[in-house]
Image 1 (cartoon, rainbow, N blue to C red):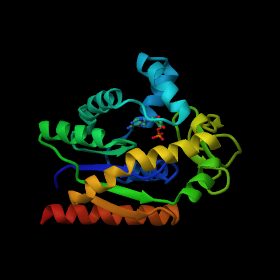
Image 2: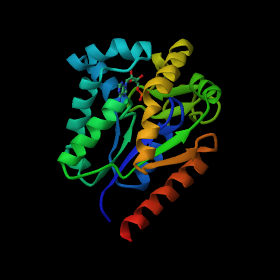
Image 3: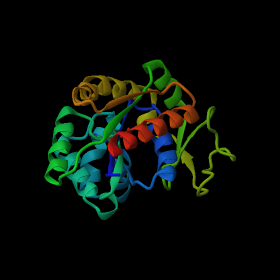
Image 4: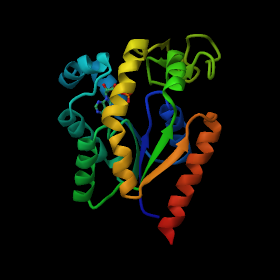
Amino acid sequence: MSELNLILFGPPGAGKGTQADRLRSDFRLPFISTGDMLRENVKEGTELGKEAQKYMDAGDLVPDDLIVKMAAERLQAPDAQDGFILDGFPRTLEQGKELDKLLSQLARRVTAALLIDVPDEEVVRRISGRRVCVKSGHNYHVDFDPPKREGICDQDGSRLVQRDDDKPDVVQNRLHVYHEQTEPLIEYYDERGLMRRIDGTRSPADVNDHIRAVIATLRMEDDV
Ligand code: AMP
C-alpha cells in the first residue's frame, strides 16, 4: 500500500475535528490542522501568530504565502512521510495548486479529498455550542457531545472555552469565506477524480463509518 495523503474538507463546524480525532486513533497518520497550528503560534506569540491573529479574529483567511510556507514545512516533517490527514488546508485554489506543486516535487500526490457536507443552518447550530479545551484543542458540544464534567476536558482535565471565531457574527463571515474562497476547490478535486462526498448531517459514528469505507476503497483501488 502506498501512502495515504488525505484532505478533509467542509465548512466550519462540519465535524472535521471530531472525525480527525477518530481517524487519528484508527490510522497511524499525523493529523495536520493549519487552524490548530496557527492557534498554537498565536498562543506562543510568534511573529506568524501576531500576523495571523487579526485575520483569524475576523474570520478571514490568513494570506496564502504564510499558510503555504507553514504547511509545506509540516508536510516534510519525518512523521508525515508515510501519509497525512490535512484539515483546513488547502482553503483557496491558490493553496491547492501550491500543495500539488510541493507534493509533485516530493514525488507524492493527494490520494483523495473527503468533503464532509453540511448546510449553513446546521453549521450555525453546531458552532454555537462548540467548546474546545485550552490545552490540546479536544472538541465538545454542550448538547451533542458534552464533557462528563461541565467546562472540563475529559481527556486532559483542562478548561473548555468557546473560540473567539465561533462567536455568531464571525461564524457568518467564515461561512461566507468558505463559499467564496474554499468551495472552488471542490471542482478542482472533482475534475481530478479525487473528491469523495460524505453526508455530514449524520451522526459522528455514521460519518466515521462512511469515511472508513471510503479509505478502505481507496486502499483496494491502490492495491489493484
Ligand atoms: P480552522 O480552525 O481550520 O477553522 O481555522 C481557524 C482560522 O485560521 C481560519 O478562520 C483562518 O483565519 C485561519 N486558517 C486556518 N487554515 C487556513 C488556511 N489554509 N488558509 C488561510 N487561513 C487559514
